[in-house]
Image (cartoon, rainbow, N blue to C red):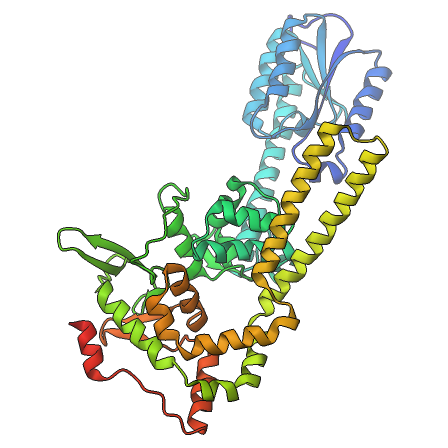
Length: 506
């Protein structure tokens, strides 16, 4: 028996449908199915439907604007006496919020009816039953949530990432057995990290990526640079330490990722481009042997001296730029090989050249494919213009943009210059370069110095503060082979004398 004196008269109702997520909708709780149930109930009970509310994904925890809009409409239209939903947990799964709304509506003479459960909140007993069902739904939801997060935490701690993947990755396997691998876009994002480490600006990086078919914004690029996932790390509040090593193919090493963060500025995360300094060619190339942190540079104007330093707190590895430059120059002079030895080494150089340019060869393949696509786009544009499908303005804008992209790609291809017909010329250039590394570095500008540094030590070089000299275990394997080859031909490579090294320190 209805004991509410304020019950509104009439046969008017509104229908409310809701799912929290698209996945929930796919698993048997579709909005259309809820709507059909409610409409059938209204028809069977002679109710007139005055409005539909919800009809989309809305949180079960917090009343959204659609739910609030329905309550406001019902309060305003006194002819509405009933809100129809398929189940009470579709009305809301937050028991405290829903019970409060139901009681408020009851005082206004409006009931909520659950079609499946056959309960209408037009009596206090029925409100109690609805409240119990809502509390059970809330308990069930909390239990599912705890189970979900517990399972995800276990996966993360095992190094398996089960969340939404960032751009450039695909996943194989499920749950704790899942492994994330780079796709073509991921490898291009890895190229972006490498370019950033070598001093390229964001604009230059974006142009290079666009020429290879990856067109992204500056904001997206900064987002990728800030994401440790590309360095093989899983970061989550569910983890005790906040971050663990994941079963993830890396686009960049974690040390280099940290260096990119330093370049972009730790506090703001916004990149502050610094002009190349002629006085500091070893910046970011030399790392501290104690902690692995890349050296940065600074000048003391009052003393008129330049220095390199490790920025890690407590490390205090601080070295005169003059000393580091002098010892680096002598190190390269020690690698100079006589032309006679290098010419005999030509066949080995040829093989090494092909091996060490594989990455560039892959980039050339991408660029050539992109160039073919653009040339096809140009032909299509010409055809559409000729047949009147493009007006003059659209044609001119499109052609200019396509020609600009084509020119940029052709410029990049020219820079790689990997045509095997020119291999002999390139080998000769390598032979000449390796015969006078020291003098080329000493006399070259900052860009020349950096190219030679990358050739000899592609992964950088370590500075040992105890020995006050470089550790050369990371050098290009080419020079290890050259040493052995030189010895076999009776050539003993000269190394800097103690006096020479002392002169640098002085």
